[in-house]
Image 1: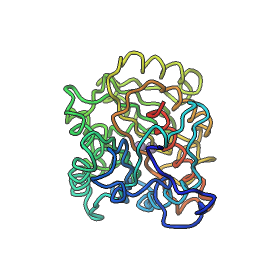
Image 2 (image 1 turned 60 degrees about the vertical axis):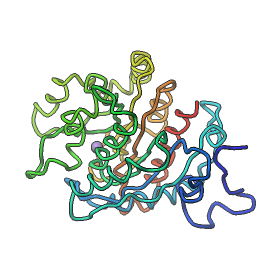
Image 3 (image 1 turned 135 degrees about the horizontal axis):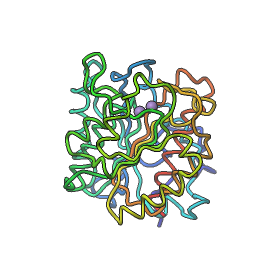
Length: 317
Ligand code: MN
Ligand code: MN
């Protein structure tokens, strides 16, 4: 029996019914009496941490909608994700639209006790500030690994700014805070896709000095897959969290995002990099910064749904 029961699309069409991520069952329907859940996917409809365009609070709904056409078999990894994994949509985390830190605390507390203790968490944002909350919850649930989790970060930006407008918890700062709080190990962090104009020549200094492996967009394109395969090998089974800011992709394929930057990855380049992580022991993940109002075609949310599927397939393979 498949670990995740999907509605039969030949009986119940993909465009009918109540939306859940990937058409996976709701957490209340896999219930305490059900099988242990491998991954709980949840929305974090929050964009109080943005520095430019708002609107990512509508991301989770758009990604749910766009994920209805996800099927179950991953051709690259040759794995049926629903056979291999028990997946659920855990709904949306509790958020406080007027407070960043209040939201992160509420989301982290909620996520820490979600589903079974061994269940991995995938957060769908929301702006990138919400990654901090899911990383904190993941770190706690995975037994507070000493020195912090390893981290694979896809983004046009580094998100290690100390503060913007006096605010320390916005979407420019989640990895600065997570490093400071010992939730992630900067020496086991790799950040791919950074590009575009910076504010100052010293913008990358904090991460570089902390030991983060910075991979520019050109380097990611030229040799990212080999770098990631070597990174996975070097981790030697240590668990890593994967965070994907949709703006790592080029605005031509992901226009619906808050701080777009031309010159990013094509969809296929991004998928190839994610597939190069094969063998990674996943601790948790997020996909963030989808801003559907800026994308009448819905292709940004569709891309995010497929990124979600790529991460689940990695976990299943
Ligand atoms: Mn980001
Ligand atoms: Mn970004």
